[in-house]
Image (cartoon, rainbow, N blue to C red; front, side, top):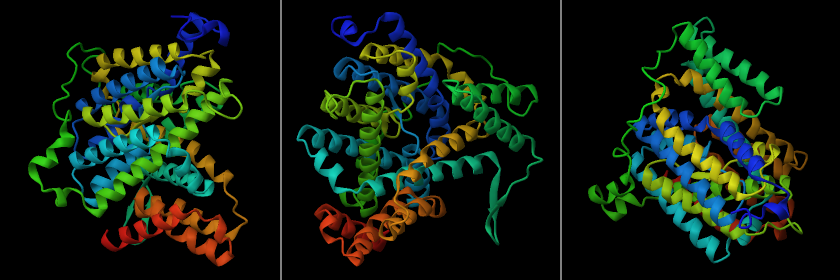
Length: 436
């Protein structure tokens, strides 16, 4: 085992790998509760989503550990789950079963383009500024959803939004959650988001703002039946043309786009921190990307949104993880987490809201990588970022950015810098606005 994972070459041992794997799990365990909370708003069964989330994370992470041998964990991605629920299901009116089909197809496409080596072409075609803008925009969108869930921001018929009732007990609980989570992360505590949720839940129970769970551990794991294989249901109820609308095609492309670049950035960033990048290249990159795309397909079959690599894996690396053995440990922890589904009753939207807000803040850091002084870059980047929260749609933000980019670059005379693929995407998103 230690020879397979190259313990000696990488200067590690079982103790460091186990501690690293557990640390990564604690840093990202919040997704077990946040994901069901978000996807249940799309009409999905929260218990089934909890199980699907844990299994998708466990399977994806174990594949990453065994095949690619990297200390990188996977789980349903933040941002992509919000896009699934609020943009696709609630925004476009697409049934969640069809949305799962979109996730499944995007995963299959991801596998194909990874195998045939198209990924480098796509990465080079889309300018870095639009990738950063998409990441930051998703961060703002997630934070906005969190602020709404917390009751800190609410609707107003005259001004669209306004400050919520800060004297409301549940809203105050969410504010407390934001403050305590911020403090924990600022102090450098690994898993600060997860611990923040635990503390917020305990405070909510103590002040009788949220219900007391009937148990902590339940060996009767919730049924997967409500979501397992549900992505095939549209074929039994609709014709091919009714399923594959322009909206669904845009959804598939968006799932693919966000997951593709989020995964690539996370893989290279985390692996570089671990000292695993050689000559500016990531060894076994294809295997790592295949593990990620396979996890997305598995997750869609089980009943959850896109599964992707987690940047929280960096916390495990900081604790000593260097090999895929740490991923096996993290995967095992997700399997054990299946027994803790009773805690879902405690983790309400006011408890998960702080996690959404904090993750949104972290993702907004990508704004610093955009060249704002170059107007031809600033316009499409700004529209991408601002449109996501204001239109309540990640797809619309990406579409606006991709439409404006060729226009501003042509106006500036930077024709040679526009990749032909960007012209193709220009027309794709024009069609999206016409038929949306």
